[in-house]
Length: 266
Image (cartoon, rainbow, N blue to C red; front, side):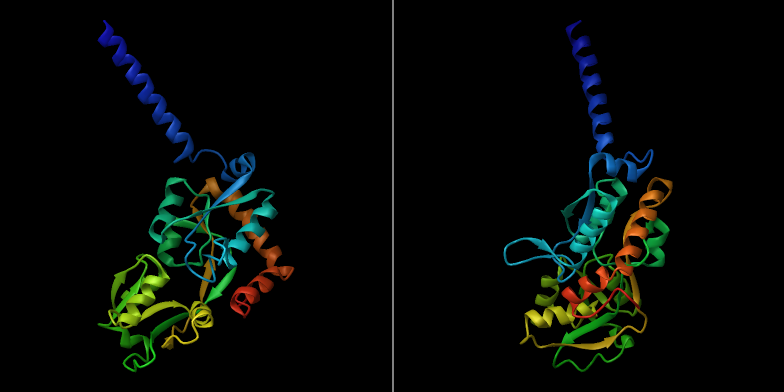
């Protein structure tokens, strides 16, 4: 009898835990914007290790272009911005699981990503640069990447581009690790945002690296979120916020503050 009662109690507790966990993660009923307004904050995923997009200053504060864009969007939505940092691979997975509402991390719109996520309108435009050591003259065009060793965070746009041109891509966790591999000679090149290269050189003026070539097309940088009706009103509100930030010159001001140029316009 006692064993039967204990078994029933165990079942009740287990079921309760399942429902409790489901209420925090993976519940995609209703309207996400309404839930965000109800809780008073929007949960924004980013790496925090990719200057000048998202990084930590000398005092350990999370700063960067994307951080300020996120704060401005949250303000226009009437809520607080709650930033959660993680490695690139886990950020989009967190969107899938419902741990994060959106991701602001210099994310390029690609055909493959658009199949799985809805994107805001672009808030920035990006040029992809192939970065090599200063004494490397073997890479002068994108075609020269074939058979070369590169490094980037796996599933990033840069890794996909490198693979498309025939490079052998090594997965890394962040930009610093990438440059360590480049300086040590363990890779031949890395692909990254052109503006990221200039920001790195500003902080490391003696670094013996250069841009070997640039990808011809600009990419559009936007904000991914879960696909479908669940995020429709959120996407529309974020689009409106981005348009207002562009019209009143705030995106230009932030661009020039962090990149030295305006990347908010084509």
